[in-house]
Image (cartoon, rainbow, N blue to C red; front, side, top):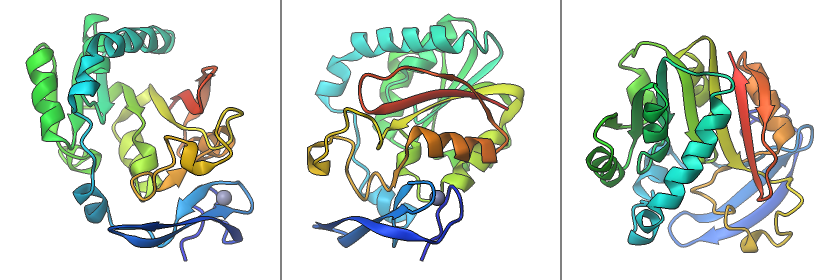
Amino acid sequence: MIPCQVCAATERHEFATRDHPHFGPMTLWQCAVCGFVYLDPMPSADALAAQYDSDTSDGYFAKADRKLARSKRRLRRLNKFATSGRFLDVGCNGGFMVEAARAAGFETIGIDPDPASIDWAQNKFPGNTFQRGTLEEFAGTSPEPFNAIYCSEVIEHVPDCNAFLDAITGMMTSGGVLYLTTPDLDHWRRPENLDAWDAFKPPEHCLYFSAANLIQLLEGHGLTLVHRAIAFKPGIKVIARK
Ligand SMILES: [Zn+2]
């Protein structure tokens, strides 16, 4: 069994089971101590990547204007804690946040494992650097540290969130900030029927956080919460400083 990735407790209870057409029977467990929910057994990162649902449909990019406007709002929030220097978007999709950061004066890089997203982003926002690949691959190139890292709706896909955060914090300057978002299992508007919640999709989403255990995880990696946005949808949006 996998101990809780947030608090290392092994006491847990079954949270949900589902039968998946490709992965077969799946069990989600909830840590009895911190409430973190996770798949066990966990599919391998490769198996998950092979199933990765590319989000470059026409519908996605038809919302480009709205996404860029949202990114500019988020960038203004980020700017309260970081105003210049190097910016990295981990899982950048169409590159909207990367472009917003560039326009605000950052030197920007966006990475994403999906080649279609990277092609689209590079074509649409040529003033930025976009690279295809995973966080681990990118971190392996030992890039110069970043003053700001943005990582939106990615950590819930990651089988080992501690390795993931080690890679992220290893690329941050001292005093640098991380803007992280993920679905909120404990949100007051999260549907009680999990199947009615658009963020409930094991095994793609293999980790499910509450704000409290996400903040605990970040603190365990030497990050201090500096901002938590009010969310009217079941999502957590936090900024933490190294
Ligand atoms: Zn726990």
